[in-house]
Image 1: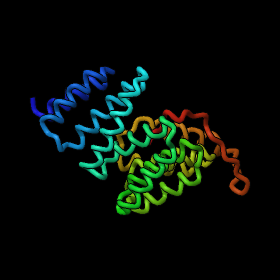
Image 2: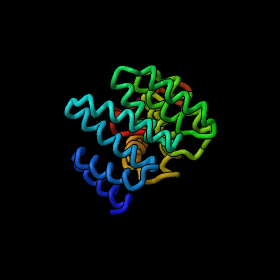
Image 3: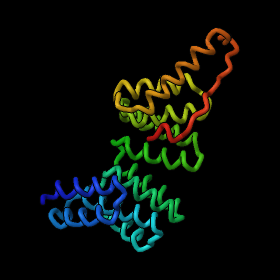
Image 4: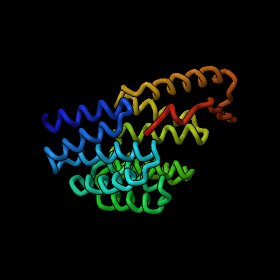
Length: 219
């Protein structure tokens, strides 16, 4: 089988929760193509999942090594940075996760993704103002980045600004319409706005936020 076919089979097994079987396919893909960053990332992700599921610290340690190998072959592999940052945070090394992403951001000032990933980890540590600032920086680099717009909308909604959240979500959908969770949030916010419009005075507007689940809107 070719590396591509092996990776595809590994992804199928991974999506079905068969992480060790997926890892076997990804190992074979790497043997066929030792310089493929995606192969190392896929194998790392499988072992990371298996290690968490069965509390296998040896799998977690190997996953960390593989994430770093992935970055050796592709220094701007977004998913790999995300996986490694999550692993570092889960193993009590949050400062190392921040250093990892800050270093990537400094080495690649032309990319918006490092700032989006920094925003994610800042949000997870409840540092919403800094997370928003990072997303604004990402959009200054790439105004048409739907991930940054979605994430900024999420933060605006969480901070009690549904109108700005709605604007961010709508811009994100205009760029990438294949976001069902965002479409649902837009419909909900529009309905809330329509319901409150007749009783809201422009000079003394009270902002309201519909109850929402963070899992509905993801980076």
